[in-house]
Image (cartoon, rainbow, N blue to C red; front, side, top):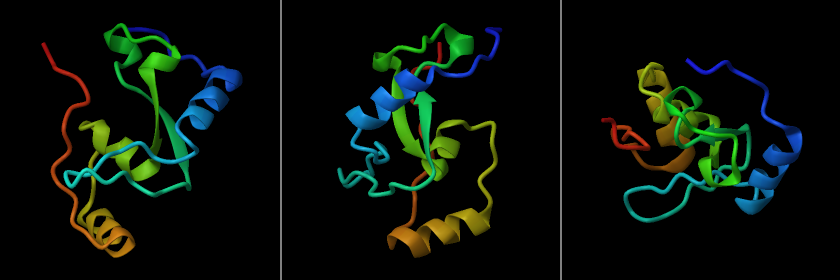
Length: 101
């Protein structure tokens, strides 16, 4: 497993600027998440699967959608209702951001 390192702050800044300081999650309706709070930089291909800290492999996600991309984390029913109240819609089941081989 790759050793976890802190993402370079300059790279993190470039990712946030590229993505307009907004979550890049796209709902099944084609609408992009409007969240601009608690933003996190997500590795599309995880470091443990050979991903890199490159701009092409990084995306901005809000905390909720970042958690959805990692199925090993549990999303509670309280989180689901909180997201419904925040966005006015129910979320769909999380999908893997990459094909698992």
